[in-house]
Length: 447
Image (cartoon, rainbow, N blue to C red; front, side, top):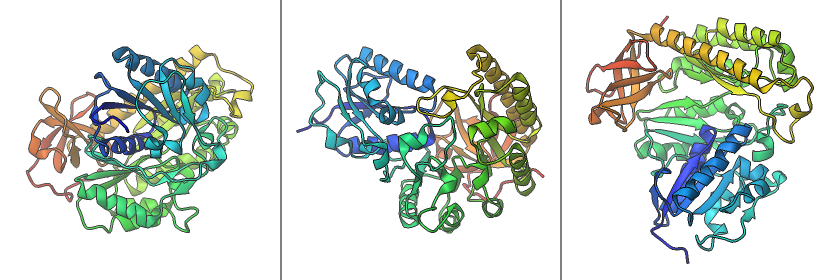
């Protein structure tokens, strides 16, 4: 029998998809009477949901495991996620790890545990990559103390980007059926969530094997009669269609925010990365987004220091991004990943040079974010405020992903509030709540 009333803490590394899956793992513990605590507190059990996109994510995982064991040397340590799927033996060699679970196994965690006593030898249960065909349903639950909910609608990837291990860690592209998505969506609304973030490895690929697509799913979801908004976590540029853009432009239930991976603005590097578009294609798409939805917030992923990226190539990417009307950048330093094509490519970039390029793009990202905030200052936006309180302030996001703060008032948390924005050259916009009515019809767009 499993010992009840133990304390369990979670730590998630990586993407929003991982957060939704961690929440569902947490629900497995809640349903069996466990108490969920903060990772910073001493716990009986620690569960790590890992990422393997970069070497630094793997290194951070190892450091966090050691920190947890310093807090409680007798704690039971469980490691799952992409890093666990790809290199379970490496994780098993870390002193103190008791259980390593692969991508399939984490959704039925208690089938692999007899008790939570420390083990002399690490137990490993990881399905082969070719068996990663199941769809583990995941969404925010009461184990996840958030105002915005994550809902996993897609998993896996059929793309072959030369730098990426995700297809090896998560298998081929697969989707949750529309009926099940709608059912999970309604449950989240019934739980009080006002913003639901649709997540997946390649969300734009939704429905490929189900004779449907993301546009048709979004069209069904916005018909639900309730107060909410939907945010798409990330979407590949070749999958952001005109019909999706038109749907977002015409519906207040769809956030005016797109996160569209670029990776490089240089055609040579994009080809080496085996991406499915050119820089010109990307530029045309961003122009189309801003034409249809002028106040849209647009984020972009960029990788610096990819093999063969010369200084001239980098400057080309920098200037390309400088001139694009994107709002912010997620900048990644290229990291050599085992079992990828990119690791074999010539032209390795010095690591210090990678860091320098990363820093330059981060500075550019901050300049772009400030310019967008300044442009939106003086407009009215709907803000969903979080429940947390920090030094008398509460924070939340607009539809187009502007971080806003206002004087804390519990009656406004967890609700969509009309707010007048004022930008004062900081990391957030100050917001003046206009009324106590929680409506969603007062958004003013910037032409």
